[in-house]
Image 1 (spheres, one colour):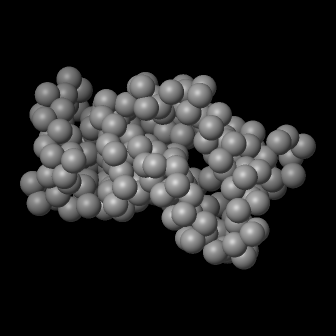
Image 2 (cartoon, one colour):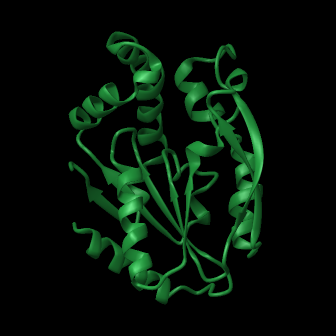
Length: 209
């Protein structure tokens, strides 16, 4: 599916939206290495070329401090799925406020180098299209907030190769592989089985680029 076709689908749903007094919220979900960030920036350009106001939100910007998601006594996959984000806070301060047409959001942004959170303001135009990008977006606590949902379905071997090359911050290749085996891939498997994001998404895109 081309970027133009994806954009056309978003615009059709945006034009037909029931709630015209608040932003239109689009979720771009997918497992690690599926290409979510790349696609979102391409769709952002397409939408802007069509005269739309667009705001991008990366859910990974809003993870919690390290001591709340590591060495908690839980298994690592559990920490990743359940503790990586403050799910309730984002439900209240992000998703509900978008639905209540709040023009200014105050959200915690995570600083990786300092392991700290800083509150920052995001301005949201009423008639904008919000592109929210990240993993686990179709979890039960958040899925009802979206107006349109897209899941990037990428072959496992492609995703694995991408993340193991990409995530050098974890350590050498073997350290990356071990961490993904312990933490990320089991958490993703839990999400696929328990939340069925592929079955719930409005649009599933085969992503192999």
